[in-house]
Length: 174
Image 1 (cartoon, one colour):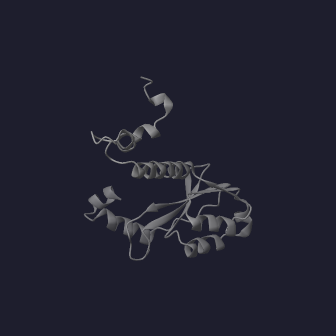
Image 2 (cartoon, rainbow, N blue to C red):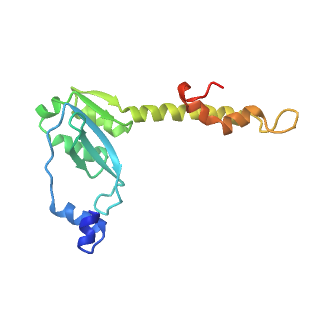
Image 3 (cartoon, one colour):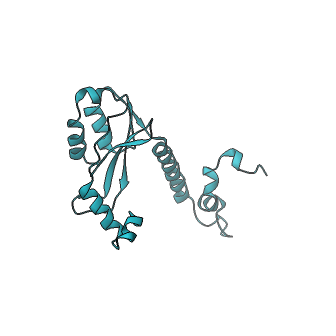
């Protein structure tokens, strides 16, 4: 879009809008393994959403379709327009932990299994572990008991917390 915009003396946003108005790429057939996720899109007055929902073929690494929103209403309209036979062929639906995606899988892809992508599982585990670290840190006094300086427990939890997230193989044994 940027190169086209420069050649025609318009903004990349205008180039993208013109493309969207005149090009309609048909939906691809639902794959055996369907990824559903969202990407941030500039807030467009017609979309009424900050996110565009991406349907993706996990095996072939190709897009199936883009939806203007990730809401239940939008997901329902998308899946209801697809023949039941095609929906029943989907075996796995891989998503993040957005409730509407799980709902859509249970409602419209009844023969599929649901999987949460590994990025979101890792992020959830790391966020939970960090919450424990912060809770422990909040219970530690900042100053040492004798008043001579920093409490080493608080200092380690605050300043050296990165050590908790390192692999054993990445930490020097010394």
